[in-house]
Length: 334
Image 1 (cartoon, rainbow, N blue to C red):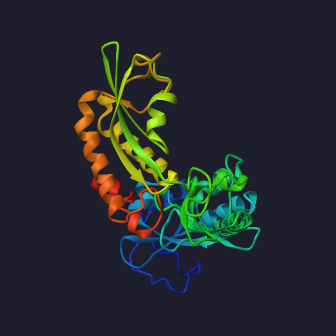
Image 2: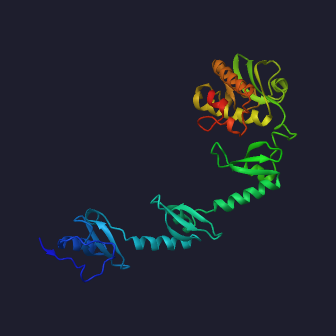
């Protein structure tokens, strides 16, 4: 097989590269030329080559296996392309993230440094998506909250991007939907005067009508009124208030009920009664269960009642309210 001597003597190499003695095989050189590179020398050890990019002239080190089996990358060309795409996205490219090869560091027009995936920046440059600065976004959210009498503490402890955690001027902390806060539709569950701050209840109703047996789980400030006047039940229906759990606020009752229904739908989907089965009996379109789930529903209500008696505020946002999986303690216990 034809071999050639290293041409490192004719072409200067970076000072940090150590030339490894040995010939350059002709098929290595031919393969490199086909892939846009010129072989300069063997470096570091017998398995690495110094390649000069035919496009930009930069020298890089590539494993022999990569050259023969794959397309080598020119780091200088790659970084130049990233810088061009960053400009197209309205950013200044600062360099790759030293901790992750798929991320880069960029300076936004506001002056803040952003850490983004290169693929996301490519999409921004192509007009496929937008880009926002987390620092500026947090400051806007802080100003919006301040106008409504709230202080933004941080992201939602349950990980919902549509919610943030806020503290009211009275000291009460609460999860609030960002959209609701922006429109001022957010009453404090600690000092407010609406249903969110007033005591409420979780209830479990047993309903019998025309041979159908149903369970309705919900919340209300007045379960007795809810039982007859707000569910649209026929006068002939038999309704029994099976359980009632006092909750500190309507906000706590609403949040706890939503999480409880989500768990029940996920863990006992066969117990959920389709709305068409009780059409004409109830005005609601969800939160109705088969009678055989009663023991499980009562067990979960017992867990919630015990949590309330122990001072855990279901539906709130304090540290005592967070369970091992990011949910509330009473939810985790159930």
